Length: 133
Image 1 (cartoon, rainbow, N blue to C red):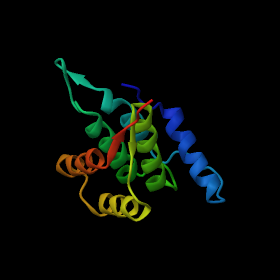
Image 2: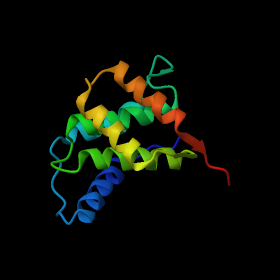
Image 3: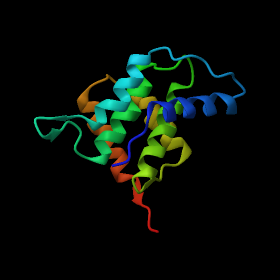
Image 4: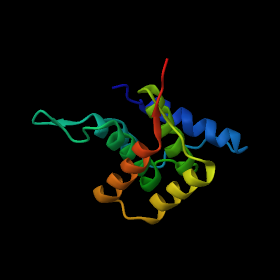
């Protein structure tokens, strides 16, 4: 499994803000970024906390969106970081723009729970295709 580093997620946020014509800002919640990077990789007593790529991707998307790690651009950073993570691991997310926006809005409005994360994982799995070389 190829995971994202904190530096890569920060770079995604910087690019998101630059594309919006905004200046990159400081991290609002640095500890939250560490959790987003480390938690999907966590193994407890020999068992992965998030055993599928879909749960790992959903965790990244949900936590960046909900934890407000950055001062601005959290939702876009969450979405693009998830795309990058999936692509790096051999999958391409196939959501239309309006579907992607609806998913991020749903995450924004929903509770920050494991049940909600599992719903996100289901959406990601159902809408992803394996990248064929």
